[in-house]
Length: 342
Image 1 (cartoon, rainbow, N blue to C red):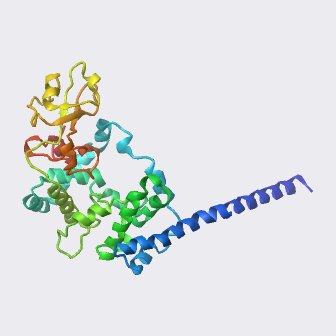
Image 2: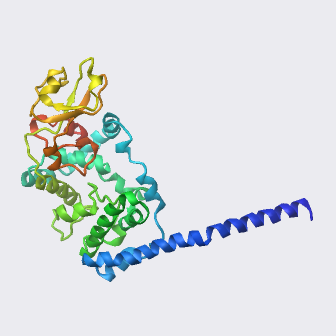
Image 3: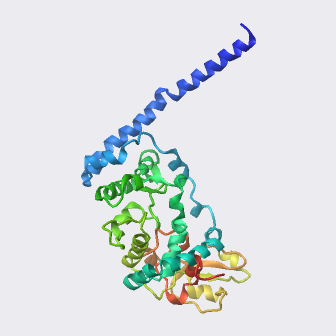
């Protein structure tokens, strides 16, 4: 046997062993286990009114877990960066420019939503910017997942299984209601959908058909998406005239208070001031410093009552712990929406 022939045989053997590993009982059982889970979960879905036809349609061609879902679940930038770093990465000249353009393009819609729901247009534009970059994310196929793929989390992520099962049932209801086709039922790895990234359960609670075409379509209709966001805020106790938080300048020894919670009056007594020189409002509200360091930093409400009635819980870290925002103190929102420069 020549050396070359020997090497070829070794390569062939290695290839055979690799193929055997790929189709081993353990690998086959993993996929079979997922299919078994899907089949068995129908009993749960049926109790919520999901028909067999809807279920089959939803899972047609879904045979294996989505590995990208599990990978993305392990990394969430909102929890990897400090709030200032996160906001700075999302509020930049590009987002401000697009925000100004969208304020003009959708001015009539925004004005109607302000009148009907009482939510300032800058709030809605900021949410749209933060959640989907004014819809740009929806044009990137590599960023989207078929929403029923959230079954991957229910099957393979014990920490998120309960959440995933609840969202999966809600997604099936959306599909069954006919507001969107299976082909367009896309979202983030966790099932957040459309221009304003609503999870399925929130969609069922707050979705609005603002353009009057008979469908609550937050994926393709900007009026529907923004109206749905405004509806969520209104129904969760949004109160104009209150502030969501403050950007503050700490005293020289301010870093020692990092992460602490005090009333606004107590922070003021310690030497924390607003960079614009304005007075603090709602001085009895409890706030925590989110990034105590030299220079400016935001202070966020940490009041349990505010958190229970939190209107913006699904809209990301910019609004963490917020209940409402008013015309007198909306500069950061307008900045995020592109309606005000630094």
